[in-house]
Image (cartoon, each protein chain N blue to C red):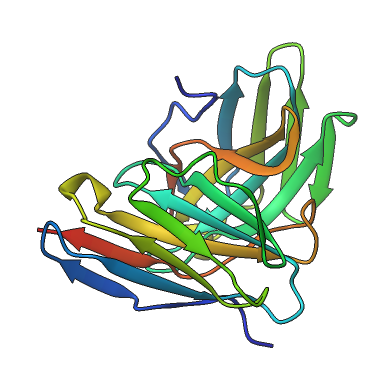
Length: 113
Length: 113
């Protein structure tokens, strides 16, 4: 079966541009997570959805970051007015329930010039 | 402040020998621990986990040991195979949230033929 997919796989943005990163979770998975992985670091939690409800956004680094999952399936992570420090791999994961194993997508590598 | 630490950035072992990857944590509220494996340009893949009520969990060639008093866990791979070469991340959850994973920085394992 299909795993978690993310698009685009690579994104180059000029500083100040807005970007939108898409995540297609595994069908039927209730929980969806976004993580940010900076170079040489482990993934860091950004936000968590249960169906369409965003239950935890404590990891979002600033109000320039916004995530949504309007129909409880596909999710979009939006970053406004990108800065160089936003350069990272953005990973999406989904799980059947919140305490189940998380399946990760391949990530979107964002480079802000 | 890193709550999950993997102090060895890299490890090199000979095929057929044992690989031991170590992880330390500081938050005593963590009660569930996981190991993920990551190949380049792919997302992390779940490998094995252990609950804090256990001190050992085994799955084929992979065994995870947990020492709660020392806040230390280790992943043993025996025998090691060249296909095991990847970055291994230790992760923990708990501390009031059973879904938010806190990752270490990872250890690059190279298994030489």
